[in-house]
Length: 146
Image 1: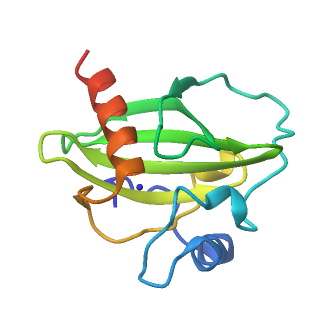
Image 2: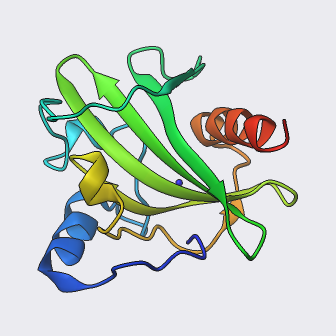
């Protein structure tokens, strides 16, 4: 779900994350992130409580907004957690709420790692035809404008 944030790019971990989570067309699938080797067991030392995001398009998973902030460029960076059963995965996303654009800039097994690992799924782009990204974007943008 590629942000204006390029913090801590590089390193073998970043490349490995991209290769594991990437789909065939340079994309990262949020819906199936917990099914990849990137997902962790959810046993974090200090688990941050998030705000549940309604996602009717993916009723098997629970998505939470952990943190969001506005960038100097006017986009929004959001840290998301996906949980399905005992598996947990995190994504760092960038949104342009005014233009309705979204992309993923990082995925990882813990919140700490998602802040530094990169997994670009390409540039910011429309969410048309992607119901999960539309639901996530709508929720995050409504909170950003509240």
